[in-house]
Structure formats: structure tokens, C-alpha cells
Length: 562
Ligand code: ADP
Ligand code: MG
Image 1 (cartoon, protein in one colour):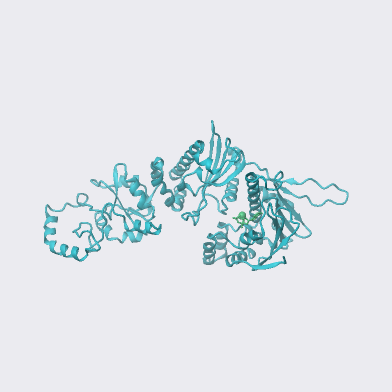
Image 2: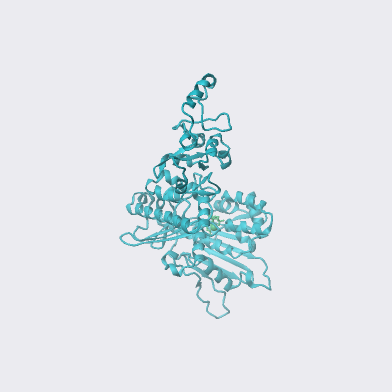
């Protein structure tokens, strides 16, 4: 097949432009990205071989190789992992599958200055394309395990790339960077300098479980070529003692497994001893992913057995409402070819899940007690998903309620806990009042709020779709009912000034004719028309029955196609 030229997809082209004119100051991270990809490719190959031992590949020496050619000014990152087929190269490298990228590019366009752009780019992974921060041409030679023909991909990052088939490609992937000219004044960004490469690997990729070797430079005639040097310690972070590992090292592991470029908000370590031994290293990200609430969201932890990677996205280890948590669990006593079916039934896995869940919740509780700002970030990003647990996890409901906070009429920008609400309840107030809606503003403008505002009774302002559901599931807190101010008859009499005896009846009689007429005219739309004490300035409002679906919930079910 001849060499074919293709155009990058629009988003890909935009990203590449950014990389080439790199606004991002820390260029060293390109190597972390390429090594991370190589490591993933080795994991994939090992797993594929485990599942299918007819696969004709040698997995006895899986590794990553770095090779510097000073004269040609190239740096090659090579792995003997899974590799890519011709079609895969086009799909995976020529397009950007991650839909968050569109959001990213939009935000980037809106960032006016270079500093803003720099910050933004640091927040989004650009993976393979980061190679173009340091190279003006990148070549990738790959052959998928089990296939006979290889593929060469090449691009200068300017709109197009070429693809050609190759007959004698080694299995795995080699990415060769043709480095931009070096600044003679400044060795800091010269990636043909050995110590520089060693330093970057040590800094960003030390924990990678596969060996990362530096291919020695060709020795002069007659000299023996020295052995390749392994640059990383390969020690799993969770197997090292707590004191020995720095925050930075934890953060690099987080970035590798989450493909997030930002530091995590929280690192959680757990060590379980006894009959079923395991270690867990969990991370709470600092930002909710944009697709957290979509069907295809990849959730779950990485599962290792005695330091050997077994499975990505292992959903059995945490409940769905903690799907944003990333991390690694390393169990000592599982079989290496454990399957998802087995995991679903395993008693030990269930115990592990229960313990990990409690550990995450107690971490959030500590955060709330000790670091208000961090907790506020946590709740802003993950409150909506955590609240799903109030519906689905009765066992931990109290623990979730204890860390949950809600917007309230009590204060504009300071959410309250249910406990805080109860402490502020007026004498004689028996229930906890809330109203659900799309936004704080739309709720505050609701006529339902008038009487509560007039009487100074606090109302929780709930704006997440899940709020409709958990308030029903939870029902009460410390013996106080949770009541929607938009449902049923609410008698605020005892909580405000007393109505004079019989005044309601007298009014009802007086307006009887009008109410009857209205009910007749509105027969198709409403069940009942009645006088109300809940309004102060609006003439009328719509109220549901205590057990009816509220409008927001109706919308939510409709959106779910039910
Ligand atoms: P990400 O790693 O977040 O998926 P990248 O841009 O780093 O994004 O890589 C895109 C995809 O290209 C990877 O998901 C993988 O499928 C493929 N890929 C990249 N490098 C390699 C490699 N060395 N071996 C096999 N596949 C690779
Ligand atoms: Mg990657």
C-alpha cells in the first residue's frame, strides 16, 4: 500500500496548534505521557496473553526503552506491548475521542491571556499530542500483537499525517521525536541530554511497574557496549512505607491512572491485614469529570494481585455513588485470572467494598471538620453524585447525611447541614422545609416561598435532580420530617402569628362562589382550588398533592424516558 495522507480531525488540529506554539511551560511532561501510554500498552498485552494463550507473542521481557540519538537529535520511546493495527492508529492518534476536549478548547478560546491558557492546558490531558511541544516531527512505528504487518504514522503536526504499512516492524510501538533545535544557552530543555531524561523519568514515572531502560549510546570501536540501565525503581507506591513516599509521587501515580493532569484533592491509603490482606491507594480528584452522569462513564478502581495489574475499571470495589474515586487496590489472595463474574460473588470483595466505602466517607468527614475550603470544593464537585448514596446505600445513609450540605435561605453563599438547620428551627416548627427547582434563583422567586420568607422560616433550596429522590427516601432527620413547601397543605399558623378563630371558615364561605367557579373552569388541569395562607403578594400558586410527583421529578423521569 502506498503512503496515504490524512487530515486531522478539527479538534485534533486545534490541539496540535496549541502544542506546537506551546503555551504550556512545563514541557517535560511529554515524556510522562509517552511512558504512560507505553505502560498501558504493556498491561494490555499481558492481559490479552493471559486470556488467550494461543496468542503468539513473547511476554517474558516486557519493557519500555528510551533511546537518544544526539547526532540526529531524536528521542525514541519504545515498548513491546500490544501495538496498534493500521485502523487503530488512524482512529486513536488521528482523532480526539475524549469529548471533554471540546469543552476544553472552548474554555481555552475564552481565556484571554497566555497565563490563563497555560493554567487551562495544565488541567487537561493532551496525551500523545504533547510530543509536539518538543518535537517538530513525530514518527510512530507500530505492530499489533498477533498481526504480521506494521504501520508507520508520521506528522509534523500541521494539519495532516501520513500512514503506510511496513513489513518488518517489531511488535509493539516506537515513537520517535525529531526534537526542536536546542537552545545552546540552556540545557534545561535539551532532551538529548542523558541526565535530563533520567531526571524526568525518576520524577514522573518511577512507580511504573515495567522497567524503563535507557539504551546506551554506541561505544567506540572495540569497546564493549554497556548494559542498558533501568531508570525507575518499579516499586509500587502502595507497597512502600507511608513516610517514604512524597505527595508528589502519589500525585504522579494519580495522573497516570486517571489520565487527569491536575493534582488530586485527596489521597487515601488503607492497609488491611488479617485473613484477607489488601492495600488500597485511593484518590479523590479535584474536579468532577464532565461525563460523570452519562451512561458510559468509566468507573472503578484498578485491581492488582500482589503487584500484578489485573483489571481496569473494577466496578465491584466501590458503590456507584463513589464512581468518581480513582485508585488502586492490591489484594494478596485473589487468583491472577479472576473474572468479573467471580468478583461479583466473592464475599471478600464485598467486605472490601464495604470497608473502602466507609474509609472514603470518613475521609470526607475529616475533611469537613478540618479543612473547610477543601470540603467546599469536594462538595461542589461531587455532592450531587454522593447524594445518590442516600437513596441506594441505607447502611451508610447517616454517614452521608453527616457530610452533606445544602443551599438554604439562611445564607446566600454558605450551605448548611441538616443538623445546622435543625439547630436554627423556630420554636414550634416541626418540619424541615425544602423546595426543589432548577436554580437557586428560580426557587427563590417561587410564590411558594412567600409565606416562608414573610415568617422568617428557613427553607432548603435543592437544585440537583437527585434531590427529589433522596428527600423521599430519607423522609426525616432527627425525628423531623422533610417537607416540600410545594406539596400538600402547609399550616404555618403555629409558626407565625395565629389566625383569628374561624376567620378561615368565614373567608371560605365568602369566596365559595369564586372558588367553585374557578374549579369548574380549570377542571381539566387542577384537582382542587382552595384559599391559602402561604401567599403574601402573589394572587395564586400551583401546589401538588403531598404524594404527587413534583414538576422537577416529572421532568427527570421524562428525561429518562419513563
Ligand atoms: P489516553 O492515553 O488518555 O487514551 P493518548 O493521547 O495518550 O490518550 O493516547 C491515545 C490512544 O492511543 C491510547 O488510548 C492508546 O489506545 C493509543 N496509544 C498511544 N500510545 C500507544 C502505545 N505506545 N501502544 C499502544 N497504543 C497506544
Ligand atoms: Mg495517554
